[in-house]
Image (cartoon, rainbow, N blue to C red; front, top):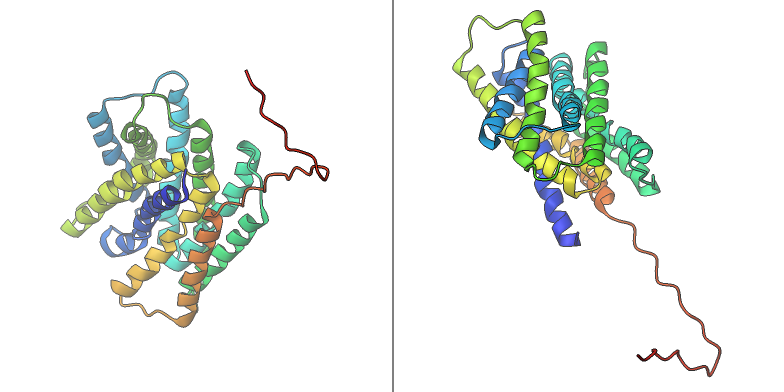
Length: 307
């Protein structure tokens, strides 16, 4: 992939985590309180069923169990843990915990994809985590054990799903929307019994609640995950994972624009560090120069053979 095409693909893929950065605002401002499983289910299941109805394509052979594994890791477990962290932690702390994902992808890629761990990858991880910390942490931000554990497990879940998606690829003849629909549907179906057993359905939903669920389902799941899986297929796994830093960056901007939060100089410095980490992670090591052929003085270069 050429440098220009790679940059365009990275920019399009980054739209997905940028949309996910709005989850914190939508969760706290529009959704019913203390219902992470309900939010996860309604985000995934309707979008997955819509895609299955439109594409009319189901998995075959070994892709049945692979679709289940990817659906649980990328959608079911990740969504529930993400919302649990969002309900128990300030948005900034939750985003900081989730920023561990590239570090996990770095290790898993070396084990499952035989990718080499380079110094610039380690620097990008540290730079990105530091940038997220400056970007989102506020003075006096509270820590909650359940929220921290949920955030770390969520990062592990999505990192594992990303690496396995890269390792297994997509079946021949299966389109991007069908592949996305499998995982959203599986994730939603897995979450449904837990939602009904532990949370149940709310007595009533306001128009604000319905609007929030619709946004998360259509934009935050159907559209965003189609863009995300498209990027996973075309970019290195580690490069994709660093694009997730767009999530806290977007969350901070939305906090400033929607919630009237202030932007401190340290936050601006953090934004620069996050962008620098993403750019550093996307760059590729220069190819080694071609070896020089040293000939004795006065020797003629070899002539091409005829015939």
